[in-house]
Length: 267
Ligand SMILES: O=C[C@H](O)COP(=O)(O)O
Image 1: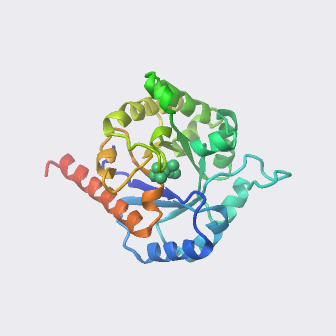
Image 2 (image 1 turned 135 degrees about the vertical axis):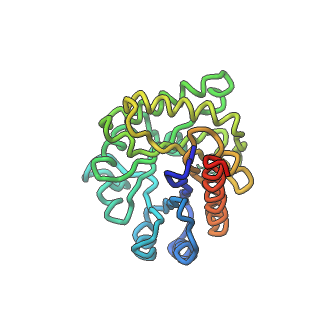
C-alpha cells in the first residue's frame, strides 16, 4: 500500500506499437505535462524508439524509460536480441522481463527469466518481473501458489541484497489485453499478499520489492486496484498508450497517495 513515503508507480509498456513519430509526439506531450511529485512514471517503448525517447526527455525529467526485454548474455551471436548493456546505452534504467506474451509466444521460462533478472541487476537496470496465472490455474484455486512460485523462480539468481531493487508486476493472464476481463480488488489482493510473502522469504525481511498490478487497468478501475494491500503502483497497456490516458492515470495515482496520507494523519 502506498503511504506517501514512497511514490506510486504508474507505467506503461507500448508493446509492439508506435513509430518514431508517434513515440516523439507522446514523449513531447509527456515532457510538457505537470507530473505529480508523488508519482514515479515509467514508459517502456519498443527498442526502436528507446534512444529517441531518451533524447527527447529533459535530462531532469522524473520519467524513467525501460526496455520491454533484453538478453542475459553480455554480447554475442544472438540474432534479433539486445543485451542489458545495449538497453542501458539506449537510455533504459529498467527492463521488463517475463511478460506472459513473451512466456507464451517466445518460450520464455522461469529459468531464462532468472538469468535475465541477474543480468539486469549486474547492469544496474531495475528488473520489472511480470508474473501471473492463466485462467485454468485460477479456476482450480491455485493462483497464489502458482504466482508465488513464479516470483521465487525469477529471483532465484538475484543476491538477497539486490532483490529489493526489483519491481514485480502481477498480471493475471486472463485480465490482459483486448480479450481480458478486468480483475477486481478482491481477486487481486490475495495474490499480492502471496507475492509479498514470497519476496519477504527471499530478502529475510529486508527491503521489499515494489509490487505493481497490471491487466486491463483503466481510469475507471485504477483507484480500486491501488487500494489493494501491497500494491505500489500500476502497469498499464492500452489505457496509457494515448498520452491523455497516461496523464489521467497519473492523476489517479496522485489522488490515491493524497487520500492515504490524509487518512494516516487523521485529516
Ligand atoms: O504490459 C501491460 C499489460 O500487459 C497490460 O495490458 P493491458 O492494460 O492492455 O491489459
